[in-house]
Image (tube, rainbow over all chains, first blue to last red; front, side):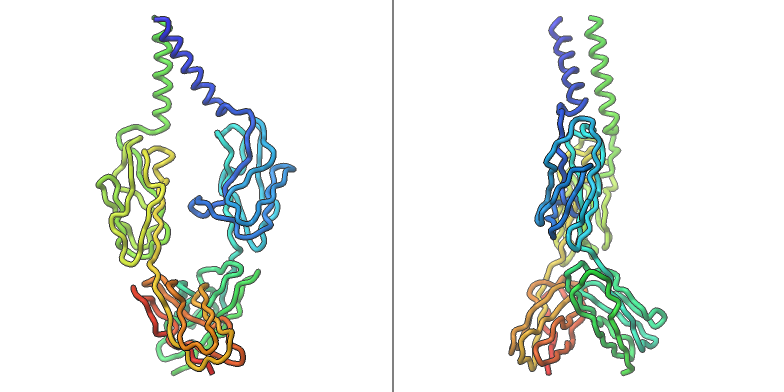
Length: 199
Length: 191
């Protein structure tokens, strides 16, 4: 009879010890670069610098994970921030960037980075009573004379080609697009001019 | 005897507490997940014999029948939409607080070839674009193709990103809805 309570007590003690702090005294400060679905996404550009307190960490182009050089001890508060954005990109932590070491078994922050997107748009001149439908790749926009200024629904990431043209002409008119095709830079474009004339 | 009973009681209490965080075992978990890229009707998911038909532009899914805590699940694609292939990931496990929303269904739209003819091109440097996809057209070329890059049943629009040296090219018949198949009727006229 004596052996059974001893085993039970030992099991309980083990569970309590594991539950308390994951059994570790120091913790690595790590994270993942992820897409919208928290799947690995390699960093597209150079220049990213992360910070925790006065520690800095440069994350190279192509990285899908990061790890600070110094570990932190159990109970230490941490707050990882983006100290410098990659070229033409914006990164933000989606979760796990702040806390106290030991609250979770491992520290793993999730960082989402994307090329800066900018809108494209312009003005339609001469549109009659019909509806004009513009297209850029698979992105479309219907325009009527009531609102001749337009912005395409999908913004264009830095460095990406766009090409706006007419998908559907308005009834009785033919519209042509000027300045509709280019490579996106570091600012929005509102210089597309669509001119419609009667057939 | 007394201490053994008390210890057993303590363990039972622990077990009860753990079970409480996981929910009860009577079918309380709404098995669900996210969908990326679905752009038409026809997707049917299935889990252990229970089917779920998705709406055309669904970005999430939830099975109607609640599943029990710790019950096994495996969410599969039973029927793909016509012209799309949907693939599940993180789709297998035991249902609990951490796993019940973990499944991701990624749908890719079948790509087809878009191309056409070029007339009058003499110089080098012509680059065509369809959205973010580009193709460089060699001097004196009479045909071009974007290759297998255009998703079916979705719009496309061909434009000129860069004109050839000393010439201006215009696009005719350059926009439309991609069929479930190749399309080869875009015309580039260069003067």
